[in-house]
Length: 104
Image (cartoon, rainbow, N blue to C red; front, top):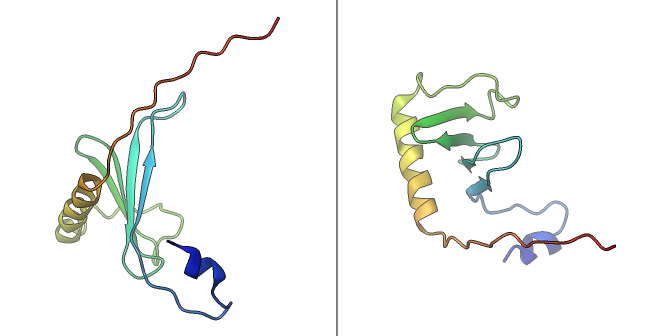
């Protein structure tokens, strides 16, 4: 629960947590998954499809303009492993689209 964080005093310190993002396919974008990890602001690993990744150091590059996948292969590989592990703990729920008919 994040309730303790929401009710905390303004000067409270918070436990660092990984953040997993999941963006499904939409009319203007493909599926994307991302993981933000490490001390805030952290590292952000995007996965845009099979073997399609981007990695950003948010402390050095908050605008996410300098992909460091090739520059830091060891850290990249460990983050791919962490993303895979996090995704493995999730339960997929498929919700079929509902058909709606306009009112006359």
